[in-house]
Amino acid sequence: MTYQAINNIAAIDLDSLDTPSATKEYPLATPIEINDTSKGQVSVFFYCKSHATLSAGQPVELVEGTGGDAEFVTVGITTIEDGQGVLIGFPTTDVTSGYYFWAQISGIITAKAGAFSAGDQITVLNGGTTVTEEDQTNRTAHTLGLAKTNTSGGLADIVIMPGRRIHVAAS
Image (cartoon, rainbow, N blue to C red; front, side, top):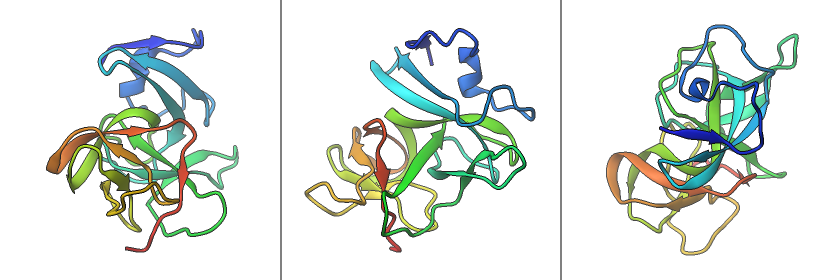
């Protein structure tokens, strides 16, 4: 991927967007807005710590942790049907448990996916490790974004608007 900083965060090595680290290199919850020239769209990433080994494109919830420095961490997808919902992030590469990485939260995201068609409403379900078709024609509190490409499973491009939080259904 080819990245270009938009908001002049010169202190961040853009190559680190695709390179997890065993040591914390930036303050947790640091956001960065970049122009991914390979996808032609602005994307937003947050710096966080992995709760488990993650695959590239696997959806995870981003939450405040319980560590001594109030870490910003990932957790598995769990049901939530109230409040403002949860923030979902995606690693751009495989991540070892306990490593620090940049989770993409908006823009065009290459995600692990079930079967769906371009233009379908996309969501995640409790315990899910892929995005799936929401089976709705209108946007709901469960809608994460839209499918940009067709897939019968594997990886697919999806589009998520900045700041999108969702409710997660049990199934």
